[in-house]
Image 1 (cartoon, one colour):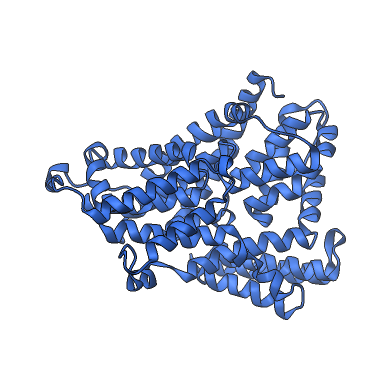
Image 2: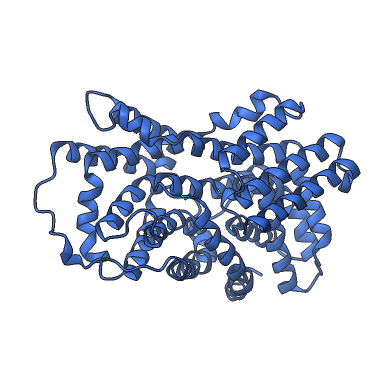
Length: 457
């Protein structure tokens, strides 16, 4: 395995050098060098030869020392709301764990989820799906569900460094994120997508139409596949429910107070389109309250041990990469290069549908999921003319693109959720790669049939 990873890195180095020397696809020297740095960063993240935060630091240093970006541009990701939602997630998770609220909620959920390991995994997926309809932030959903799920895993005999515990972390990470791609306001890429479409093309999406088009396949059926993959890659058995006595004591005042704070936070998160306050600032305000020393929810020692700066660096790197690819013009070059390679033909609906999906999938590998809409949405009129699809149909295929994940770094919340669970991100790769193949072979063709039934194409 190590030799394979080193081989992949060597190939990436060769491609990066070739790009810098030959400047393919009309790249300028700066774009060629930027593409080489991006390619090396992607290979480091993808192979895991070094920790993710090391690869991010390589990206920061390379862009600054080569003069391709200013420090202000490189580190602008730290002013992103996504970064502060990550911090809020760590603090909220620490409070739930430290107060014992996670243990209590886990004890309440245990009778329903402890019948078998399969019931546990499927139940956590259902909870993640349900939260997607009431909470607009996948990071917020992970912050709430991870401490509860990991506490429940421990109580059922799924100890650290076991396949079962890793499976619980993976299903929560994916379950709080991927199904929500099919719910319009439920994660950052969706919001960016709808915003860019409205600003650049004047197109507005209906919540109900978007849900009807995407949720049966990308939401429900994809979730079934995810549960099956987690059970296959991370098999385990849970302890019998009777092994641990039910919790009969009343919750403490601290737990009740924390529960009230979380309910207010959930309420503000679920009504963000009414009050207009970004989910990150709601989470940060909650974190401020929880960190007040006299309240005791997250004492300073707990804060120091709970906030994972390496994970913050990793996420910041992914955000910077997407920003740099778009700002340098590489996003458009990559998209047009892929566009020329794909076999679009007027009147060949299935071929065009597959090609449009592959265009989105390929572009998001370089731009990350949140960055892809900024690159491809402006190309939609040209693509509509090429394929003879409606503008709406072309735009909707882009949802398939940015929701089909090859490598975990493309979606920051996946990485963050694993960090909150105290697990490595490497196990995610087994599921994302397998799900990628299943999506191409099964879900995308089924999507085409579903869209035909609805009259979308």
